[in-house]
Length: 326
Image 1 (tube, helix red, strand yellow):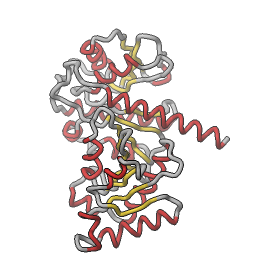
Image 2: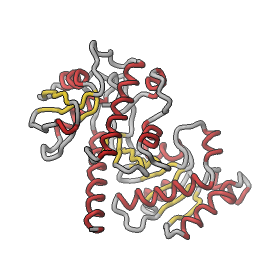
Image 3: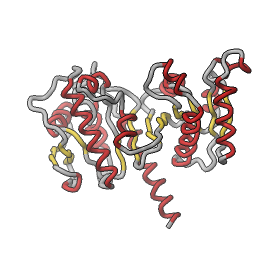
Image 4: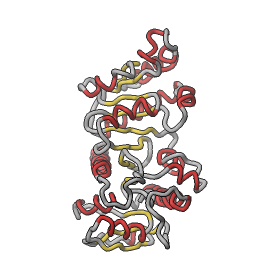
């Protein structure tokens, strides 16, 4: 459901309004919040509260909501509130539990608000860290992209200083491996993985820093020894242009903004966030809660639709892999 004070519930309703009835979806969250979203959008849906995923009936004209919280009265739109942060967290945790037990084949998460999570005392700065912890993954990475460029981050939600400290050899190897795995899951048979440098001009032979020489290049060579088609380090200011021109299939970026600015510059509507390294599928739209327009029914569902399409694409890829193994 995402943050109940944001646009998540209403873009979910818009998504489901256009979704094929052959697909089966449930929403984790508050039935009352989802009913308000139906009213805001003006959709012809009935909300059905369910205790478990297994109770969902997937009837035409209904939205099955697995009740993880219940608001009465409803929270106002566009406000940072601890109870909204807690509700978002509870929905995510329930979704993860169902994914781990196999009652859902994947999770698509609507936007959450980091300050609301913090107000609720939730220690996680975002979805990725929650998913890694509760999903039981040793290493996870964010794959963000669209039909033009795709990137995996070495470091995620931390200060730039901490990102530099955290971009060590092990982090490089984890990101390169997950980039290769993620690209393969998206249909690239031998993905070309470009690794961006940390410093300007990829260090310029050590003139602007030695991380490329001492850390990143050795990691690329080690990945190549594992059979990964990795190359670099490439200057961060040109590597995404080369990827857009078709020279690379996926780019490993060293820190959050290095990777996300090029992706988001291409537009938020078609951007998607995929968490790699989990034992289940997870995608999300590449935008936030948009508190400024929440409740007006004007938020675009395009990025959420893209996230759902990627989840289905990954599910089909996984099913094909299973069929080939058997």
